[in-house]
Image 1 (tube, rainbow over the protein chains, first blue to last red):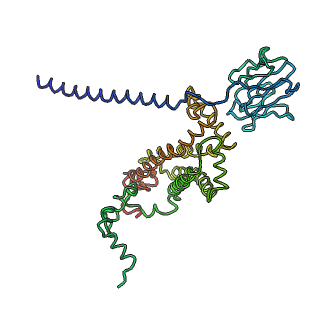
Image 2 (spheres, rainbow over the protein chains, first blue to last red; image 1 turned 90 degrees about the vertical axis):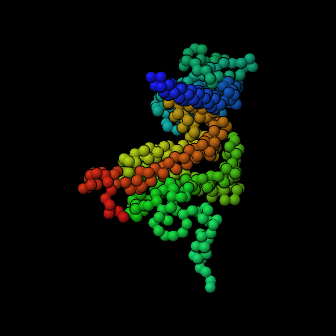
Image 3 (cartoon, helix red, strand yellow; image 1 turned 90 degrees about the horizontal axis):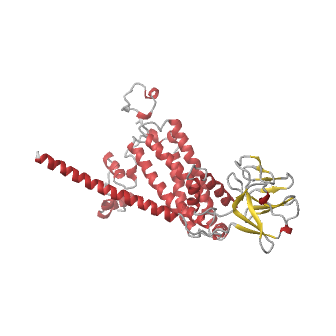
Length: 161
Length: 264
């Protein structure tokens, strides 16, 4: 009887150490995974500012659609005022282009088409081109915040000079 | 009396130094020949014996071997290309141009790397079609098919990461489109996109990450799986496995045991 208990204890001790060992390894592995994930995620990005200075409003004549390929935005001067659209296709991120002869915005990669107010005419793009926040600074320059979407055609989404 | 070259070679193979490296020794017996394969760290992945029928062109069209060939060309040309290439923006583009127009044989190496990469993708697909239509994915080799699918993925990732390195317009937009496809993964999509590029857009961080993946991580992973892939061929019964043939081909032997006199 006593011998049997002893035997059982032996196995339990072994199992205990096995569990302890595996448990420690699991914790260490989880820690390593978390460490690796944090390491691979950059904390500081040297990317351009989302706020773009588009210059003086009189650069954009009434009825014009102007692309800035470096920042990926359109500045459009419509009857209601100035507004800004993202030029990045909502399909897979290619740079769209304004086609004056067709009176539409078209993507060269997969053929998506948009109206000059961003509304989708034809896919494969799943969504319309988003409107970006636009305002005038104290120097009278148009500024666009590429990180902030605003509702299309809303009164506040236009700048009137 | 002058010795022939063969005799010199036989003497060399009998020396103590030679025998300390290649233990199997000389001789043309079946055992000695088998030992040469079995005792070599590179050759031991392969079968010690192969049916001559499986060495014929029609059996495999040598597609797997050709794929390995293109892979070796890619390693041999890729390493010299690294000597002239800085994975930084915009230097990478200038280095690519230098490789084409300034460096001696740079154009040759770069084109060989590029064409071999295209050939490897083609050969991997051809190899998989051949394996599929031959039914060579059937048990006992179903796991080697899985390894093969992993190797297909490795090949495509190597191809994709290499595409960014010239840092031209074609590369930039291809990677922009490709990485946006990764964003379509449910829930984690944006995170994967961010980690893959090391930022929100294709920039210097993305170039460096793709360079490290292309030159270190993916080739090492591919070599690891290639080693398993070859070793599994031997372990799963060689290039020809009677057990994997459909019952109608197996004919009278329904036990799955190979016919003793067939295919020698």
